[in-house]
Length: 457
Image (cartoon, rainbow, N blue to C red; front, side, top):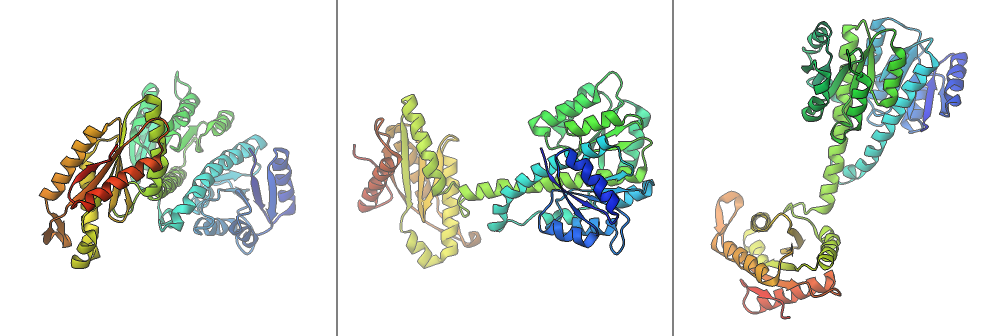
């Protein structure tokens, strides 16, 4: 794995040193001498991660970081502040400005490279989701960046895994004012708690007795349902080697004891914000997928999805030598409903009709809006006789129960016509099947509507 790292420092010697360290690990390195130059590079999307010095003239690193993290175009870029400042208050200031980490010079090579690799790996995952979410913005789904920028990172669900009462009690006391905190003192139960709890953050003590805390972190990262749950590890000051190993296996962040209260709060907020941001991205991707295959008005699958999925259902029916039946349903005199009561009333009828279809079919059946007032229901493992019974039952229910329109202030009678066709042998196709069902529907309308007509074999 490689990435393009932007090194920002006003001292050329520092830039050269970091450039040499990173290049030796096969990272692509670009440089900037001040905050304004760094902002421009990031906004053009030319880097994957920023190593930012805190003390620079004109615009210091804290201000540059704040601007990066409050700009929707650059909010997602990880920022590591690398500086000679070594006080807890300095770290907290950097984290509150939005930095993903705060490293104090001189930083050991192994710690620097492990942190850069860890953040670059997470950035690649986020970029993949962001790329998929581009379509969601194109179709009008609100981008999650602005919500993420406004998110204070409070009110998250946090699980502390620590078998020392004095330790987890102190951490819980600090976080309890901002987060909803739970404690698991038995490491053997921790993985189950994480898998079932939908936590925004898991804090794991690396000093667990008689239990390998890194193995727990690895297990959390390997499970599908917990793969994206942030992990904050807490280590002793002399346990830096295991901390680096933790970053390599997927730990998101870490704290060294003795724990500074404000740093704990800041790092927890950062991880909760990140979790919410990635979840919003995933929700947007899922929503865009659903919108691409469903009809916005009725919530049924659309024609595009039906045409692609019907071919699969037909192949399955052929391979298993099972029957398959298609119904095409049409709302009778739908144009007159629109002309008499308005298009809003027509939409009310379409939505209610889709709901009644759902209630009348099985989970394995495929229902879609074919276009206008026409709908298609595909029934796997169903022969013509059974399909005709289902269709007739639905026709009767539609005719017997008037449809509410105009917010329920009026009810109007609605009837439907249905054409049915069944799969014919191994050479039959989706197009031929639908054509026969459509011809049967035509005969139903020609013969007076409000009836079910099977395909004439």
